Length: 439
Ligand SMILES: NC(=O)C1=CN([C@@H]2O[C@H](COP(=O)(O)OP(=O)(O)OC[C@H]3O[C@@H](n4cnc5c(N)ncnc54)[C@H](O)[C@@H]3O)[C@@H](O)[C@H]2O)C=CC1
Ligand SMILES: O=C(O)[C@H]1O[C@H](OP(=O)(O)OP(=O)(O)OC[C@H]2O[C@@H](n3ccc(=O)[nH]c3=O)[C@H](O)[C@@H]2O)[C@H](O)[C@@H](O)[C@@H]1O
Image 1: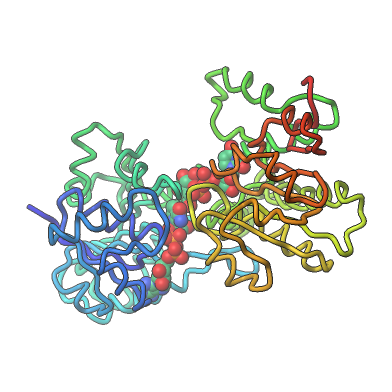
Image 2 (image 1 turned 60 degrees about the horizontal axis):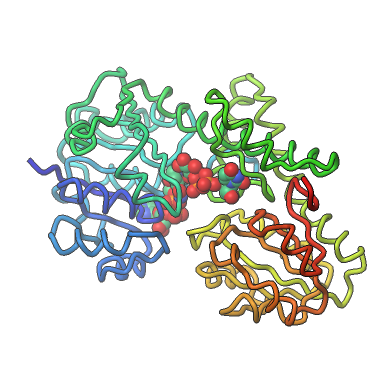
């Protein structure tokens, strides 16, 4: 029997949860406090840029299994299960801001009149699901609800693929035992033998943070190695490739760059460190990762300034790529923000291009010159900085760039270009972790 589900919050994770769970055969109603988002989603517009999302959104709207509403009562009317997919952004002190979770719980408590399973999909610090249980118990009869932790591991840009083919599904319950309704919701994944990890709330919460923190650590490690490789005349790509051939290390997440960004690694590493400090366990490794990542971003500005011979007044920099990584329009904690902010502060003119993220970037930086075409963005630039690894930049026509720029200088923060060809064409080229040729 189809299970009736409400999803609260229809951002990157909420929308993926809505289309994924309805595609599995459940009846899903998505709710958000942003009316405009709900209107657009109802008409089949996914709001965000995410590969395949529009297809699955329209498909499931058409089957009638998926709908959206801006009326909380309508969302909860027939629901047996409610997924919380609201944001848990970073507070000023680095801890997770759970106010969106609390508002959603208050709204549920006001209207709950029959048993409901409350599933936390948002990333929340260890101890939060226990707090949710206690908070709800203080407001309503405890027989009316059950709390389940079900953290999400999807990547932006690959959200659809990851939702339908997760490496594992983690489900935390009060007693750590299997929960039949959760198994039924994910029946489609059970059938394809996806591993399920049943555990208690705290274990589920920490699996999520440990996974993100470990990936952030891996990136930070390779970035530090890249900085060393640069100084020593070595090639970080060959180093990463050879390291990755050892199955114990694996080649994934060893791509050097300007430091990790995005809506999760920066905030989740900080929240994990904060949780550790709160209970007296200093997470020194993760604290070092956080500060090293900041240093990496700053180091990119220093590299750029060096290429401009530290004489930056009246210079123009072209920034190619504004999203925090390719295949998304998300700019949260994007390395491009640090670069653009750093240069604007010093009066440098910035022109920019991104295939999908310009609208979001414009909201932060209205005074940057934006172009629909990468070559136009490079006109009269003294330096071109590639900030995002969009495929569009892998095959840039360097002759056309040469004709447009004022000075032939490229800082390739994602190592998408072939250094040798760039140098042969007369560019001063610098990447991350590989300085020149003959490496
Ligand atoms: N973005 C990602 O790739 C991933 C995010 N996560 C976690 O999932 C959670 C959500 O992240 P995103 O989807 O990126 O956030 P988002 O910021 O894109 O979306 C949050 C949505 O919640 C809505 N909202 C806020 N308060 C609300 C309320 N009281 N009632 C209903 N709707 C409300 C907002 O209007 C917004 O549409 C976070 O905890 C994040 O750490 C987990 C895995 C991947
Ligand atoms: O909790 C989350 O929100 C999600 O965070 C990440 O997903 P996402 O932020 O979408 O993107 P990633 O592909 O992990 O990249 C994160 C950042 O690391 C950088 N990165 C990634 C990999 C790499 O080798 N090098 C590197 O610099 C990217 O450019 C990007 O800035 C995780 O990969 C997901 O599993 C997790 O669910």
